Length: 107
Image 1 (cartoon, helix red, strand yellow):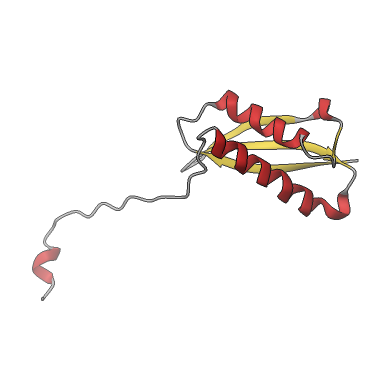
Image 2 (image 1 turned 90 degrees about the vertical axis):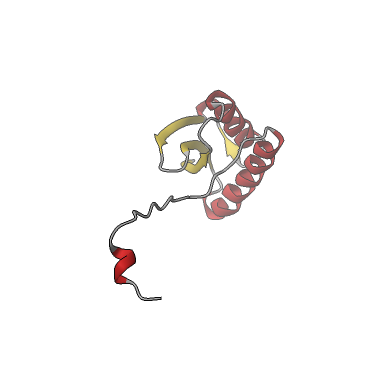
C-alpha cells in the first residue's frame, strides 16, 4: 500500500471546508482507494491565482495509479461543478505607465 497525492487549486473565496469535504468524498468513491480512515485533504498554500489543496490517499494499485488519479480528478471536477466551486486559470494584469515613450514611437 502506497500513499499518493493529488494537487488542485480553487478560486479565492471558495468555501475551504466544503472543498476539503469534496476532496475526501471523491477519494472514497473510488474503489482503488484503501484505508479511508487515513485519507487527508488539506489547504496547502495560498497560490498566485488559487487556494491550493492536496488530497492524500492510499492505494494498492500502484501500477495503474495514473488511471486511479484521473478517475478521482473526474469525480472532483464533477462535484466542484455541482457545488459552483471554480478551478481558476492563471491570470496576469499588465499595467502600462504613460511616459515619454509616446514621443519616442513613430506612427
